[in-house]
Length: 503
Image 1 (cartoon, rainbow, N blue to C red):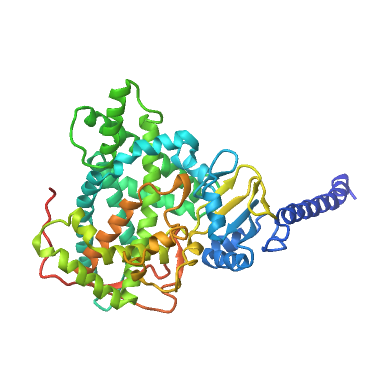
Image 2: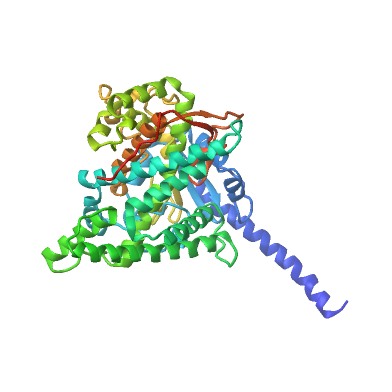
């Protein structure tokens, strides 16, 4: 036997022994953290349960929820990270209320910091975070929301017209999938409402491509190597941040000249100019680069969540014709497309039943079902269990939505009528917009857009879902949407298109 073969004969048993020792230590490490909490007892080496999570996230999280039924939470192990799934609403509130340096950090996505970087609002704590939210508040005043409402209607109308034209060019026997169409509608809405004319047509197209890359990267493993989806997502984000930074700089120049705001960034920069003039110094976190990062936070928070809600609106109204009839009756009493007049904020407030439908859609199918946090330190979750430092914790907004409410598994918009006060009685279970210091600052904006879409969609179009087995099952994209992409047949139901003009 030559020396090399002799060396290998000695080395291989050592390597096998070392590998087995590492696998044993990994199992012991996991079981010490797991203790007697429900969860798998045996791990797939190194990867844990990442393959089931990536291949079928719906089934993976359903299993975690089932495991959590007895004590309100469960555990698992994914790609080297210990995870804790929170089913119980009060335990979820405990996580949301303790986003601070010595407890939890909101991460939105398990690999979020690798994608977004560190300079984002979602990673801020304490007074800095409070101050920034205070400076953002003028973006969502009644005046600002009224401006956005007008822009939203113009965009919704153009997209509904294009959808109807698209269906008319296809065989009438063939349905069209709405998922990508709705995503494009909301991307244009976000671009127009957030940064307006500061984004050129060419920049919009590039932005759309980069956001697609980003969305794909969210659902892939974090291999930051050339050619991998995760790397493409990171590069796409860098380009989008550069574009948004430029938009912030241009808006700031325009607001310094005293012009009227026409989009969200204008309302923001107008307030910043005012504060700077009064205090003689710019407020913290107000550089163009920082504003660009925060704008991306808004885009990320709004884009996929709202796309999800619009798809579920179509799905649920089709499967509940009585609800659809009531919405159409209410909208027709308040607004007519033949008036060629945009809906006003006052008219939206009059649409009580349609607002209840929007609230129930978000409860019944909360877009972001999980809100990941990371444990900065060991945290006592209950009297008998402490979440280990470094764990990724997933409070389940979805599970909370089915707790407390009567007949929670039924789609019943009437539960949100003013007489029942369900939004007050069970508000702790209504976590679709989060809770605690990071509760969504734009929830009124999101609900306004949802009500507008419902009112215009059901008034201007007749629609019918193409129903197949499992078409309404939940699919993660990364927010939840109908499994079939929401396949529908569309026809125009009004004598003519409205002819809107911007006030």
